[in-house]
Image 1 (cartoon, rainbow, N blue to C red):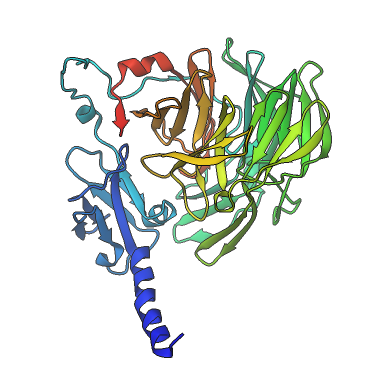
Image 2: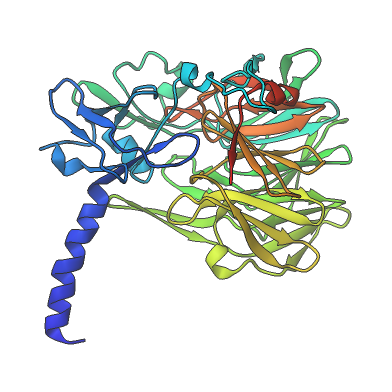
Amino acid sequence: MNTHLKFFLIFFLIPLCILAQDRIVVKDFMTGETLAGVGVSLKNTDRQVMTDNNGAFSLKRFKNISDKDILLFTIVGYAPLEIAVDQIKKANNEVLLKEKAETLGQVTVTADAQPDLLALLKFKELSSMPDELSYFGVTLAEGKIYIMGGDQSINARTAESSFLDDNYRGESMKGMVGGDIAIELYRHSDKIYVYDILADSWSLSPHKLSKRAFHNVHYNNGKIYVLGGKQLSKNIKLERLNDKVEVYTIAQDTVLTAEANPHQAVNFASVLVDNNIIVLGGSVKYRELTNQIVKEYTNKVHLLDLSTGLWYEMPDLPKEHGEETKGIIAGNKIYLVGGYRERALSSISTYDITTGQFNVVDKLPYVIERPALAYNGNGTVYIYDSGKLFTYDIHNRELIGYHVDIEVSNAEMLFDNGSLYILGGLKENVPASKMYCINVADMEKTKPHRFD
């Protein structure tokens, strides 16, 4: 390449990269549309800027701003939001504002509209899980919900550490920053919790699994299969992929370890089809560099025959679609929703288990790294993330969204007998223990938002 051209590219492209890192975009929480004219102020100062016609502003407008500083976002019709700069950067430099409930409740009466639709989807809070957990395995079996393992790690910043229990205090706490405590605690669970839906009560199995998180579980013929994910070393300094499949037999309340798993990954998709488990995608390596997380992904697809214990290879995903993802099975297609590959994704894709054909069929209104998914068995996929619940009709590809006042991300979700159960996940980077129930019939009484 010409030396002068190299010189030009270096000095032209580097400033563009820096500008991109400082550019923040403000969007509508539900629609993903950019918001112009949003007031952005630095907390406890009189410094303020406004978003431009593209809903954007530059952090450089605030001199000497740090990642710990708090920004306040305000605009008429939307609830004000306070958020730290480092949290904005972790969200791909996007800020999402919610409409105020009273604004959402103003429904225009038309020939086919109801004037009394609710602004927020109703839910019921059930008995909390015995532990705060995220990235755990969960399944329905014989009228009960089974939770297997999970992540209890904390990556948060707080002015008080009193919320930490004694079990956490001895495990890998790092760092003091100013008057705050920068907390990084690492712990995985080996417990099996059982929730009785009718009794609204939890119990603990006396048996334990290997400590793991970021895995999946599936129920089939009286047994729960636990596979994938990662585990911590004894000194909690290293992580490695878990290569074992564990089998929990409900009637005997026993745990056995099966042969090695060739699909060793985290945040992969897996589904139960007849007497087989199909696993696909996920990440297989993870490195933290300066201001950057680097992952390696797999595009492999494997099938475990539960009757024989044998593994088989299926047609790969396209190489560029080897990614972290979540999936459900509907008919002969696996629906893959959102995910992560160098950044959070917004795609809805399908993988045909009979042909191996992969297609991107739709798009979410915004990116979701790890949505909670459930399927009603009759054409409707439920997608939840951070206070929004979507229904996706696989027949007509209609996506409808609802606001629900449940503030957790990275949760898990199950569908059973006309109800959705949302449980666990993260709230402000801390594992959560809450469990909620939504009657899907209440969606007809709630104001929807349709996406064309």
